[in-house]
Structure formats: structure tokens, C-alpha cells
Length: 459
Image (cartoon, rainbow, N blue to C red):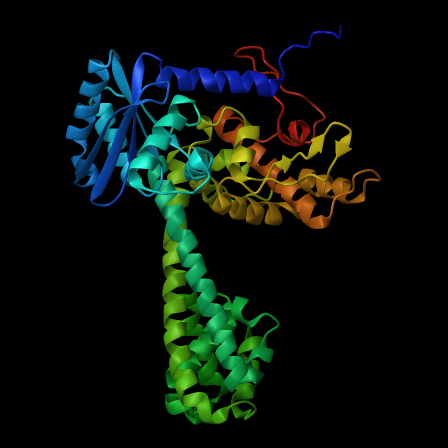
């Protein structure tokens, strides 16, 4: 007989998670699955053998489900259960309203992933049949089998940070779209102006100069701008530059834009409409940039309110805004049992592919929150060139002899390491330590004596 092995870390974490879920879905309680919609709510109460005890359909809003929860509790008690557990899909915002109403009645609530409901639909009869009553039953059945999770319960501060992060993401998309649109319009009717700067849409001086040109080039005619002369043109750009969030002007770029006013290459006959459209886009772009700056200031202020600015700033290459963007997607990191769980939530963990003697190629999980992956990638990209530990880790992963990673794969590993660092810094309220992050020293949690691996040592 082989040696008996102790439980792995994954077994212990899984057992603990199942224990916590069983406390929310005890065998002494029935389960009511609710398929939420706008005006039609369908509920199914089942026991732990997946037998349907009762069904009900109500034409009401989500905040009017109090009577339905009272009905489900009465049905459960008539069947011999002491209470009822509420289960639903955490899509949209309606589940938060149901959670509030369940908490007011002392009922526990769990959520089920829509992907699991979709797969359970196939396992039911292989027909992919979809209906609201069937989905309600499947939601309740998955909750009985503990194929569910505890929804995040964030306080007002963390919820506000989440909303600001979502707004910043939308404004970034809008700003990027405006930049691409201006570039495409100029490529058609005035391509020479794009040569005034190496990266024109990233230059505040170029943007300010284009805003001045678009405002004065009435009907696509650039002669009013030429009559200003170089000195007056530079002065106008200086005044405009403040609205683009910069105080330092690049005279080389501004003068290059003025010199190209005489260029007639491109679809000159279309300049009237293109310039008019570009002027509108420039105004939208500038407005988006102003709102972005305001949202960024508010996010940093929330981080300061949480007393996290100094802690996250201790990580070289990570700005308070970059950390706030990541934390806006994760929520309170304390809700994750470990830093590894946070990395899995982002979908940045490797996915194993092996069976018996077969060892396939591991790939990125890709599950979880795609917005969190983007935020972690951007933060890791900037920190990789400044942080000595991340830079060394990137060099090691791309140059080692065995299992050498592609540069893109190494950047993913660096982004995952950054998430681990943020989890440790925020949850344990300790500043970043290069020795610990590099794996040269292992810290000890003095509170309970456990060994906690951080950063690259935990990878």
C-alpha cells in the first residue's frame, strides 16, 4: 500500500468553502430558485432531492418580491423545513434588491453562475430547452448541490469605488474612440498634420493645436489660421493647452502644425465636412479627458479614505490611480481567501492539461472578470519597467533554459504577481517588501503562526 497523503492546500480550501456554503444552504432548509426579470418573476421551491414542492409566477418588479419570499417560507415550513434559502443568478442589479429583502426576513441567499445554469439545461434532457420555470428549478437544484457562491457584500465606500472604476473604463473607451476618429479623419483630408509629431494623438500640444485649427478653419479653409501668424498661433495654443490637462508646450510640434497649413495633399474637397466633424470630436475628446481627470481624482480620494495610498505606493511602479483601478474591479480583496483566489478571479492563473502520462500544454484560464485582467495587465505593464523584482522575474521567465515563456506569457505572470502583492498589501496592511516579493525571505504571520507566501515566492 502507498503512503497515505495528507490533504492538499486545494482540498483544505475546497472543504472550507463547502462548509461555509452548507451553513447557508443547510439540509434543514428548502431552496427557492428565482429567475429574475424586469416585470415577470418565476420561483420554484425544491427539497434536497431536487423535488419541486411548489411553483409561482408573479408579474411584479424585483423590489416587490417580499410576498413571494413569504410564500416560499410558508411552503418550506409546510413541507417540514425550518426555513428557506434564496438562490438566483447574479446578473444585472436585481439580485441586490432580492438580497436586501431576504436579509430583512432573516433568510440566507446564494448566487449561481449563469454558465452553470446553461450547462445544467443541457444535462437535463439534452434539448437545450429554455424557459423561466425550468431555469428557476435548475437554479434551486444547483444551489442544493452547493454549485453556488456567496455574493459580494461591499460597503458604501467599496461600492462607490466600483462605480467610479466602471465610469473611468467607459470614459477611457470614449476618449480612445475620439482619438482614433480624429486620426482617421486627418489621414483622409490632411495627412501632413499627422507628421508634426511622432505620436500625435498622445501629444497634448498636438491636440491643443488641432483644437485651435478646427475652431478657426471655417468651411475647411485654413487661410484664417495662416493669417494668425506663428506667434499668435503659439499663444492661442498655450491658452488651449490648459484644457487638455497640460501646462508645458512643445514648440517644435506646434510650429510643425503651423508649417503644414499650406499642405494640399489629401481629399481637400472633403475638408469642410471632415473639419466640422473633427471639431465636434475634439470637443467630445476634451470633455472626456476632463471627466477622466475628475474621476481619477475621486478614485484616489477614496483610496486615501481607505488609508491605502501609502501602502500601494510602496510598490515601485504602481501609482495610486493604477492601484485604485485594479481594486475597483476586485472589490475588497479581504473577501478572497488567498491571493491565489484573486488571481483565479481575474483569470490570470495557468490552466493545467494533463492526464496519466499525458502532459499537455498549459494555457491561461481566461475565466473571471475580463475588466480585472485588463486593469492588472496595464498596471503590470507600467510597473514591469520600474519595479526591480518584476523586471528580474520577466527576464528569468523569458531567458531560462527550461520551460521558457513567450514575452506575452511572462507579462501575464508579472500581472498575476502584481495582483498577489496588492492582495497582501491591502489585506495584511503591510508595506511592500522587495525581499519577500522576490522570494528571498518568507514572512511569518505572527497572529496565528502560519507561513504566508507573497509575490513571486507564491507563484
